Every structure is written in structure tokens, then in C-alpha cells.
Length: 168
Image 1 (tube, rainbow, N blue to C red):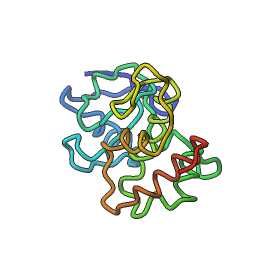
Image 2 (image 1 turned 90 degrees about the vertical axis):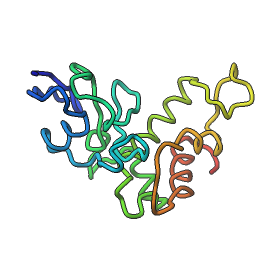
Image 3 (image 1 turned 135 degrees about the horizontal axis):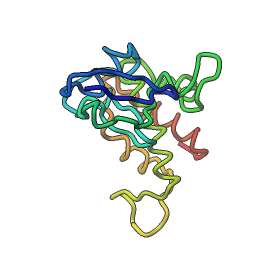
């Protein structure tokens, strides 16, 4: 089936089997290998990308579901010469360790701070009608779908706190 994905600001026409996941379309057809295939069951978050500004597990989503959508992968967040603030913070705080989960962690961290800024509540808030705050507990809870086997969680939390402008 022919589809058009807008990936990292570029329209990319593809002809795909309707069973192709967004992850496989990105990695195998568009050769954007920053997004990783971890568990392939939506449990680890290594495949997290942003679709229309919201994070999704790309291994659980069919590419044809995203015809015309704006997709941002780790390659679209920044460049080696001009890192996205979250990428720079991950480097500064050693939030990448082995690096395998890092693209999904960074995409998810960017989305978490945007969710908080938009006022999207979470179940760790005492008052769901109040605006959420970028506290350590809040950010850690929202990142719980992203697994790091190296255990860099404290470093990731410090990177997120820096970008959010709060104490870790």
C-alpha cells in the first residue's frame, strides 16, 4: 500500500506491506537506525518515537496508521553540531551508558516534559485538577515505560531535571 510519512520534516513516500510496523518502516525502509528494536512487544520503550508530538512505541504501531503524520525520531531532534537540549543533558549527565535505549529514552523524556507543560495529569499527582509539576517523582513515573538495562535512571532523571529547570 502506498503511504506518505513525514519523518523529521521530510515527506517520505513508501510502498509497504500493510503489516509493516512503524519501527520496521523507519529502520528497514528509511534506514533511520537510531530508533532501536528492543523487546518488540512494547514493554521496553527502546522504539519510542514522537508522532504528532506524542510518544508511541513504534513496534506496536502499523506504519499505514501514520499516513501523513509528523514523525520525529532521534535523528530529527538535533544534529552533532547542534544537539537538542535533552540530548546535550544526557551527554552531560552520562544518561546514555551503553546507548542502546538512549534514543527511546530521549524521545520519551522530551515528550514527558511537553506533557507536563501542557498540563496532562498523571496518577502520582495528589490533585488531578492542579497543573502537574516536573518533580523527580513525576518525571520518573512518566518515564516508567522506558527500561535501561544499564541502570542509568538517576543520570536520566538528572538530565531531565536540568532541561526542566528544576533541582534533580
